Length: 204
Image 1 (cartoon, rainbow, N blue to C red):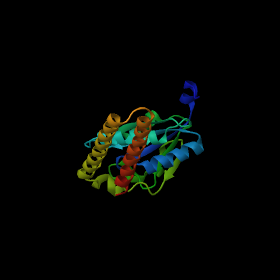
Image 2: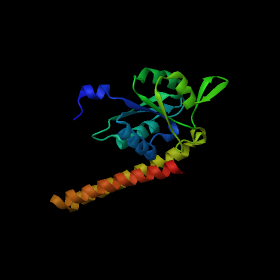
Image 3: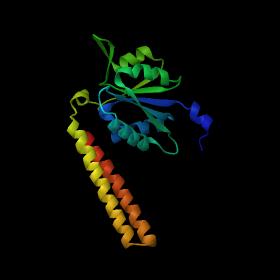
Image 4: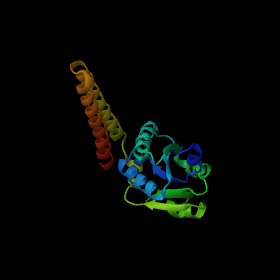
C-alpha cells in the first residue's frame, strides 16, 4: 500500500491537455502506460478557454483520471484558464516532475510571437519534456461546434437513463444471486457503452 509520504514525494507526469482532448480515453490510456513505465503519478492540466463552459471539460477530466488510476498509479486533474497555463504550471511543478505536451501545441510568448510548446517548455522549465504526436489537432480547439458537445451529452444521458430503467425492471423481476449477476452485467455494459460512445465522439 502506498503511504502518504510516498505519495507526496513521488514524481509526476504533468500532462498539458487542450480542452478539445478532455475526456480522450486513447490519450489517458497512453499516459497510463507511460506512467507505469516511468513509475510516476499523473496530473492532467486541462486548459480551458475563458469564455467556454468548463463543465464538459471537468466531466472529461474525471473520466481520464478514472482511466489512469489503479493500485500502482495515482492520477488527478486540474482545470486552468488557457491564458494562465504557464503561471499554473509553475505553481504546480515540483523538481523531478516530467512535463508532457503535444508536438502540435503552440505557446504564445508575446502577443506577436509563438513558439512550439515543446520549445517553450525546454527553455523555461528545468524538467524532462515528453512530447506526444497524433492526438491533438489545433483546428478542433477553435472549430468544435457547441452542438457536438450537446449531442455527446444528450446521447450519454439517454444511455444512462435506459440502463437505469432496465436495472429497475430487473430489480422487480429477479431476486437473490440472479439479480446480482444481471445487475453486474448491466453495469459493465453501461460503462462499456459510455466509453465506446466517448471514443467515437472524440474520433469524429
